[in-house]
Length: 159
Image (cartoon, rainbow, N blue to C red):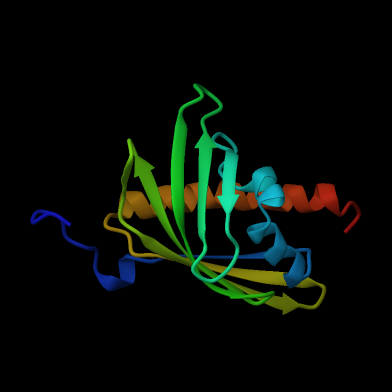
């Protein structure tokens, strides 16, 4: 962090989102951790994931590429898996890569809680250095979660 950068107040550094999906926790956990499935839903509609590598174990790494539909621009992101507690919890680091340089890490934690036949997914990502960055991620993840819901409908019709 440079001398001129400051972190947001703690209450504003975290992105918190909750979503209920019509699927069991084990399936949602698998869709997050299996690269074959991640390719089908991860990323916003206008920047879908087109490449992914995952070493799914604590300490393992992941790296993915979002590709802009409009112009083909590639946006790389990567991290390390910190915690895997199937099917309840997934924690990993997340950073953007820009021209070979890795940006600051944030930590993403996802809790999967059964609610009858459905699952509540509680998503958190922190820290953010600006409201714009946090809200940009909110938009991207919201679109990805819409795609996840669509993918669930496609692989489990009539759910």
